[in-house]
Figure 1 (cartoon, rainbow, N blue to C red):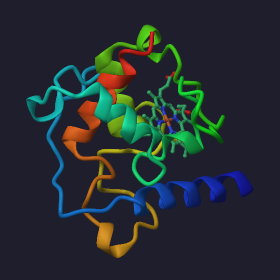
Figure 2: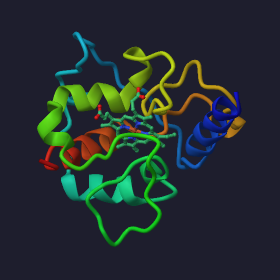
Figure 3: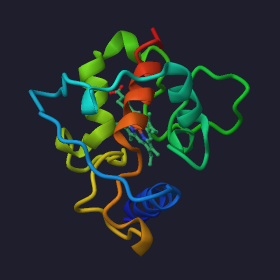
Figure 4: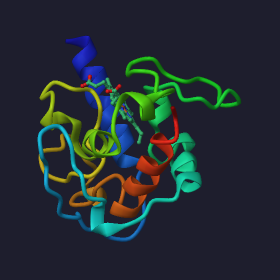
Length: 148
Ligand code: HEC
């Protein structure tokens, strides 16, 4: 119970740290545990993806995950270590897990980064906006696939 409340707060803080102008949701097609096509047909930029993952105000991934970035302090261990993720999962599998991991596990603590409906406790000004845009999702995917 404590854990569930903590997770809801964490997720709310992740969601409410996103900023910027109104952003839409890209459409996508789920097949099995994957989303094969890049959102909006974009080609991600791995360097930008790395910055998004490490940025505490952006993806805020490091409150829950470790990544191979030894200079970054205070990496989390609520989720799996993302080192080697590009060897364990395909690009398409990584894309689905970022967009909406709850499609695979309804109880997951992994926040849905490109979903707007069904989010608990979203600050009003962030209502209707995904945490990461289609372009940002593709940037993060582009970096994670390089982690072999
Ligand atoms: C609130 C904690 C939390 C945050 C924040 C978070 N994750 Fe996760 N993530 C998890 C958990 C927990 C899992 C394990 C999946 C599950 O339990 O369903 C996971 C799973 C994943 C997976 C699949 C890993 C595997 O081995 O199957 C990827 C990829 C991932 N997260 C990437 C990210 C990225 C990139 C970010 C930031 C944009 C992020 N996560 C932010 C908690 C989090």
